[in-house]
Length: 544
Image 1: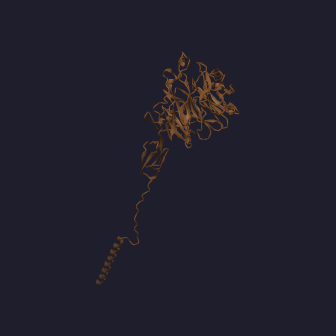
Image 2: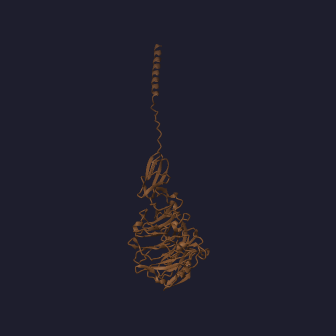
Image 3: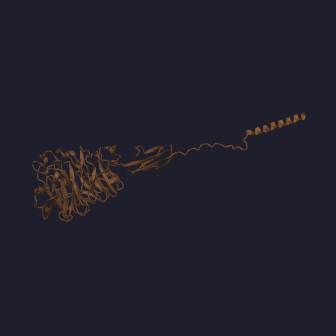
């Protein structure tokens, strides 16, 4: 019994020990169970955005941008070239240095502008005091770049004989991209005039160099009695008359020449070849506008034996006979070789003159498309082979007048195109497009779009005139408009920086040929500025 109890006790103790060992083993990782660690979540890649930075003409930027993480701070700076100033960024910011925090796609462009010379000594374009009536673009020094000659009129001269004042001309040119006053470069003594109607750059003394001729008008007065001295009946310089001026070219310096000694009223002048020898003469048409009827004087003046004299080709022809045909309101004359014989004919308002052997004959000029509306008065235009067919054509302005040539409307103006067809001038109503009547009377040929065809451009005289031109399409002309909205920037005006686009309108415009394109010159208030136009920028200059 005791043995049995001992056995049972031992078995029991052994079972407890075995269980205890099993329990201890179960609190640790059983060999059959693999314990794993949960990984930390991965950090997402930062969002990136592209910054694009570019520079317009006239400058550079410190960085062209790239791809940046969101929140990155980037500094970019606009750097203008010499002669340029920073205008602003394309997004409207005006600070040259930008501190950008990248939070989205960004594209910005730095814009620059030329610093242009401004006339401050004379308010050239103050229309209450001064304005420019006659101007000429000419390459005075034969370097391939044209200069601009401006004659400046004191507006008080035009209506009051007691306030007569001559004003000096201005010659403007470009120094690289900067418009400057170059008058002193070409003249030892600057010409001064009361009122210049036309300027010519032609060889007048037959030495192979082109000279300058200022066809002058003189002051207009309300009181006709002061036109002549009552005692002598002789006109006074500046009183509805003025001495014309000739400046001979002496190797790029223009010196005043002794001109034909007369004080006349040059309202229409042409440079003409009457003998087929290539030697130019001056044809001066002096009308006598109503109600004066003082008798016009028309003459051909040539340079002979080192002096200007009346050409004998007009011997025996009375001036008033010419007056009959020139018409008192036919202000301009147009020398043109219609038949190609080397001798110029003369086109006036409604006549074609042929002068030969000390006599002349005339035929009627074919009526233009506006003749029925009494558009007769000639004041502006040019002669050129504009259709490239080997002969000279005529483009002239026509202002509204009455049938008897008395002036009715000095504003409305239409353009007539006379094509030379087999030695005859024919008005072609289909060549020119319909156009407004408030165009400038002053027009000139110019290849504005670099296509090798001469277009017709206008020198505007007031802000109300449209900035349009006639584009030559090879078979006629299309009406197009200049895009002046692109011209922006700041200029010095009266010593203050003024933004161009703040002016109500650009005024007066000229086109100057250059070796690498051309320069567009325009007026703003009483100043003047210039822009470089190249074949790559011309598409922005012309409205599409």
